[in-house]
Amino acid sequence: MSLSEVGKAIKVRVRSINDLVRMAASSIAMGQPTYILRYEKDGETLYGIMAVFRDFYKYYGVPLFYYVIDDSDSIPKDANYALLRSSDSEEKIEFSKAAKTGYVIVPIINVAEMPNFLK
Image 1: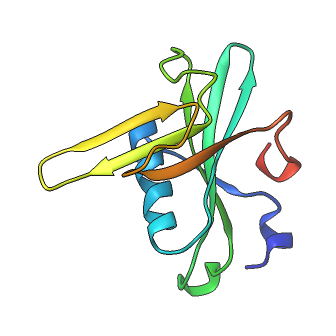
Image 2: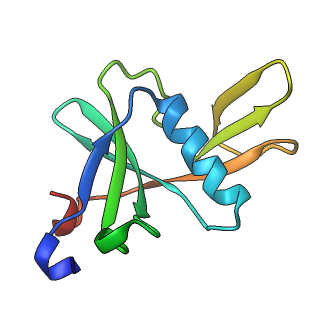
């Protein structure tokens, strides 16, 4: 299946921002540059990351958009980074204006409008 056959990215809603940050951090740990897109519209804020199917039969290369909607404003709008630190006993996710040492750092990028392939 080619991109022209799909037309748009397949959207996958995740349960929480923690799931999204964890997914982005695992991509970064595997050497894949990853960032979180932030888009605000009608009182809701959408956070998402792009990915592609790999090694999945005829769907190889199909674009995926994993996202979560924050309509409760639980994530600070001025945060530039999602930070993840994990140990044997706990996982800590923070949002910050600046990067911090000791964390996997995921940039948050504000987009003025969603690209057509995500609408």
